[in-house]
Length: 125
Image 1 (tube, rainbow, N blue to C red):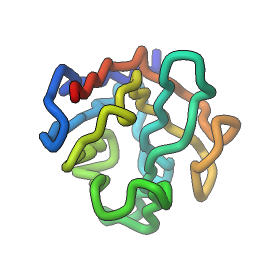
Image 2: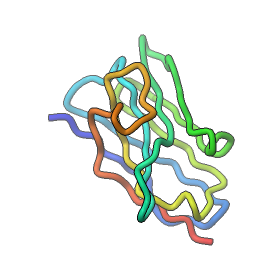
Image 3: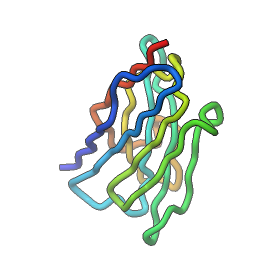
């Protein structure tokens, strides 16, 4: 049974940093895209970042344009993905979901085949 388990969420003041991690189990995710989406209250779930891992290294990384310069995604191995979030803003407050998809990219909700339960990130002003 495939599971994606997120960790690292919490409460932080504006300008602070958090690091999210996601560990997958149940199968190997080599050649899968793994990454993050987020959903703020009353809003649609939106793409944050994703990375494809092939042959022991990052093949492709995507990041939402609005987050470039503040968020960085990394793939530690085939089944682990992390995201460093710096200079956090109150508008980054959301539930962050880890996701994995079979395709060459994962930038839309429909690209994801597996989802984690989500971890809350709250940024206070």
